[in-house]
Length: 36
Image (cartoon, rainbow, N blue to C red):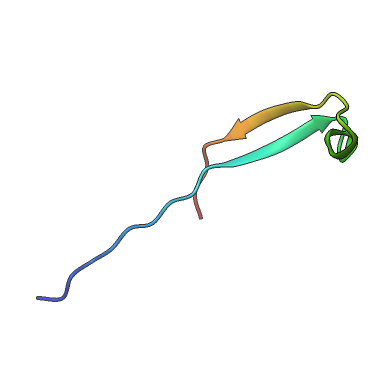
């Protein structure tokens, strides 16, 4: 029988402040728990 591997990586979405964190700004982010 072949081995089966399952890989998953958590993600996030930015609700507000996209790219402002690059300049030490504030971001409202949330975790994404959906998988493809």
